[in-house]
Image (tube, rainbow, N blue to C red; front, side, top):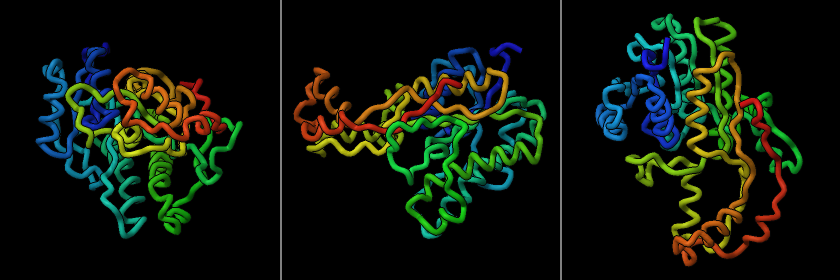
Length: 308
């Protein structure tokens, strides 16, 4: 079946990575079903991709963690690309408010595919840098991470240490997906992507600052005049958002299951500040000018993404 005949369910299509991913599938001739949390969200996604309106239909999934949340959405699709993750608006209980929503937001869509979409042969899930890195060991100069490695944090340790709850939720959600594949042996294979810090332009039509991804917002902070010194680079590995989007499509099209780390290289915030100051965009008075040289000397771990 050619791409022009295939219908792909994409969740999280209104997000920073999601909008580029939707565009990648549409440009390659796929039909796309966009799952939004509300009708207004669906309409906004249609407006963003109006050039390909005839290739798109939408469905509303208000709560991706609810039992059977995707039962209707998956029916009739040929593949699923799951970028959506639960909203976290602060929390009182780590397990109830962060860990379980992340896990259930992943396993519920897999359950729905197994029960209601036997025709699906391939599912792609967006995981995170947090599912690979052992953040407790810092920048680890000389260490090389790859997709074979897992963040060692456990469910129990995350409950005891709320500071690592978000990172733990990403690792545990992906782990739950692979456990589902192993125990349920569904009709589809799975690919999971672990992008590093994701940078690059927002997709046209979705340029609100509030819609920037967490990592892209870090760059905005460097140029909005709020800082005088380059901040510490805690996660010194990056990938372009457009490459992440293409990786989602290629992961769907490529035979074979597995994990795929996505990384273009290393960087420091000092290097970014220097590039912004020398960009010719008139940002000299808004971008930090202090601490650039020290940051440029930072030695850290790297990520081998040759599998991807």
